[in-house]
Image 1 (cartoon, protein in one colour):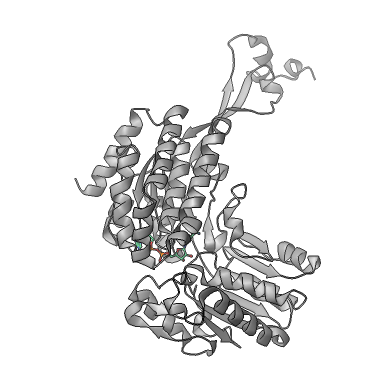
Image 2: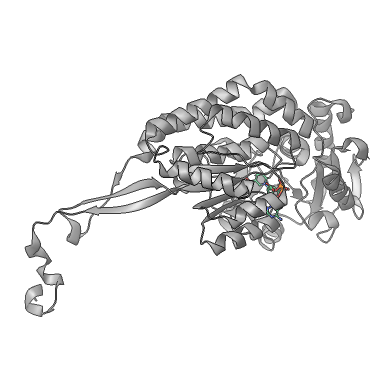
Length: 453
Ligand code: NAD
């Protein structure tokens, strides 16, 4: 038996004992997980610092605080979420008990990505535990140090048979994907997303795919451009652009392009000083493969700001590209790096048209002081999420479903949505064996007389 097969067998066996089902057990596991974040903050942030050069405060802000909030919410609400829900009845079931009972799916496979390695791996795990499942956790191998820490720490805090961690790269993930699961929750790019779905189809396993793509950002000329650019700068260059919902490119009218460049440049300086390379709040590209991929995107566009890099340190300066053409290399795939292309367009109509001609994005941003512009974006485009006059923060609202649509993913999570996503909504009708007389009309022989017609 391979290591992967063993982990799946172990999780399945533990699930079959039924111990993941009582709410008290789920809550206890969530409390243990919470304790991991209070007691092991340093191990977590040291590893992430080695992987992505994230600062300790940055790690708390963008990874662990959100997870702790999610755990608190889940502990508080679990009883309510897991309770059977009575529903409306029809004539045939008027005297019966009719309800929906959320029940665990079984063993869930969670495959995480590297860019926010704790957030995107543990957040689905919170949902899996809350819903009463077992889960095999596969952190991304790209975050070498974090994967090791996760493999070491999780079994010290939560049930290591119900929630085993499997580390490794593509061959190990592929071996896991050959096993039978009851749900697969994958976070990563759309190309691999298709492979996940293909593997899942062999066992008819349902999937949640949290993917990425090019999230557009429209800046209307009727807006406070200085504030808009400050917020875009934050959304773009946080984690060195390696954020699934980072604004990928800007669409704006040519008349404001220079002002947008100046304002973003000003904010870069404010956030990351004159020398971002030495600024503790400015990260690094995860590895040299991604460094080369991102640098190759610069070759056929005009650099307005930044552009300098250091391959040995995986450093790419915060960069702005101006007058970018839709055919440019930087517009052919998700950038996932600190490059901000600006594409001049004639106005809102062209922006909407531009967005609609492309794959449905994970996030869509619009900056404007005009409510009508916001409403047109809401009504005339589609995306996983839409945010007006800010970046990223919709991710933090646990009462909103987080997920993509079309090429940016399927399914959603966060808060109750995680619980629902990883539960089966079982339909229950509980009858009694009395009142047989009322059933006469449905039994043959079918006559009009029986129906009273
Ligand atoms: P990655 O390379 O870490 O891959 C993710 C997982 O897929 C890893 O665990 C890896 O082992 C596995 N994998 C990779 N290639 C595979 C293959 N051929 N077969 C089977 N498994 C394979 O992460 P990535 O894909 O580079 O992550 C970045 C992408 O993830 C971006 O597109 C980003 O937008 C997206 N993302 C989305 C979200 C979201 O919540 N929607 C969050 C973070 C990242």
